Length: 113
Image (cartoon, rainbow, N blue to C red; front, top):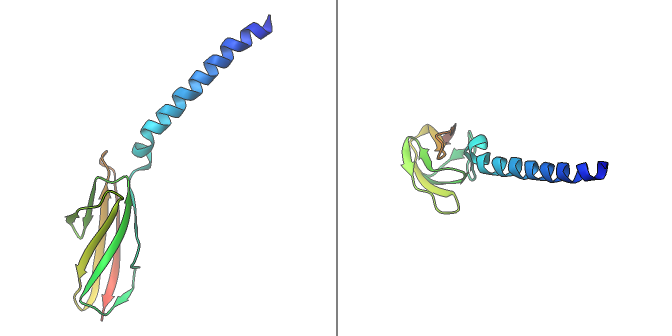
């Protein structure tokens, strides 16, 4: 008699697990938000050239802004942008926005000698 009750409960548990997994899959981008990594320059780095090509790798982004300028990204989420540096400290402000409106922002400073 008890074995007959286990089968419907097992089927219901499997269906519930599948539904929860699907909901997590669909809302993952909403929960996690956008991310990025500045690959070839670090905070406080010294540069001797007037221009510097910055490479940024992004995930889950619909828009990226570098120093308040919208910059296009390729299909792999990579952004290459040339910075024109003045003598002294130069800010590099990166802001990424996903399709849900979540943002992530980071500002680093580069020293040009």
